[in-house]
Structure formats: C-alpha cells, structure tokens
Amino acid sequence: MYVLVRDPAKLSLLKNVMNQQLEWVPAPGCPEDLPLYGILEGNAQKVAAQVSCHQDIAGDSAFSLGMLAEFEGLVRQGAWWYPRLFWESGLIGQVLYLEAEAAGVRATGIGCFFDDPVHEIVALKDHTFQSLYHFTVGGPVEDPRLTTLPPYAHLKRGV
Image (cartoon, one colour):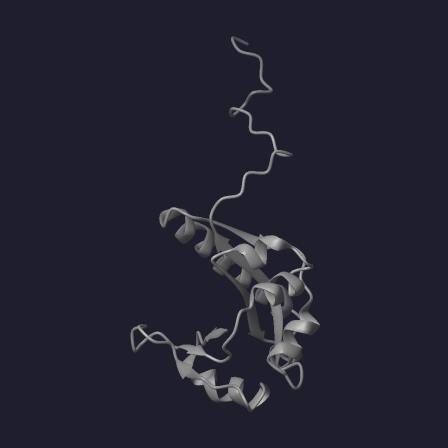
C-alpha cells in the first residue's frame, strides 16, 4: 500500500494522524521529487474490493486508490470547503481517466465505498483527513448490459 503526498508540507501531519507503525519508505524506482511512500506490504486485492462495497473491479484492477483530503480544519473555516474538496477529487479523477486512456488501459471512479474501513486500515485517529473518492485503473471490462449507439441515433435522418 502506498501514499502519494501531494503537498510535501503535509507529510508530518499525515504521519501524526495515521498508525505510527506504518513504514513510510520512499517507493523504489520513483523519481526523488515524487513523494510516493510504501506504508504496508501485502496483497491488498481483497481489501480493495471490500472497501469498495465488495466490487471485484477494485480488487481485480492493476491498482485501486482512495483519495484522502485534509478535512476537518478546512470545513471549520467555512462550509464552502466541503463541495470544493469533492470538486478537487473529481478533477483528479478526470486526469486519471485521461492518463489511463493515454496509457491504453481503462479507469473508473468507484461510486460506492466504505470510508470507515479505509480509515481503520491506516488508523486515522480523527477527522483531520477524510476519504472522499475512490478510483481504479486496469484492463477494460466489457459490460453486456450497456448499449452503445451512434451519436444522435435518436434523430431522424434527412429532417
């Protein structure tokens, strides 16, 4: 399990609110300016599916992620922070969609997830950080329940 610390100034805060037993080892092979840390070793496929409302797509993917955001302190500054946090999470999700497509794989947001078990996994002590959005990246899975039509198929031709 890895943590990407988007704001290096928040690294010590993250370490303080999470399980003190986590390792925080720089991920091997990553550029030095990419703050990606390994925190737990092991097979996380089952856990990824469980925290994603038991959706196999999260556990069967190349990788699955949950986005943690600094939460309680910001929301206390003003209620307008709450939708902004979700806006920012969605923006990151859109970038992940585009990057996955560019890499020749697929991605999807996970619409249902359990935030409390995510918090338990890393032993978040309070609401300083909150799990806001989950996402998964991997090979495409065709869903036969979906229908694809050409654009504007509902319009009569020649009218």
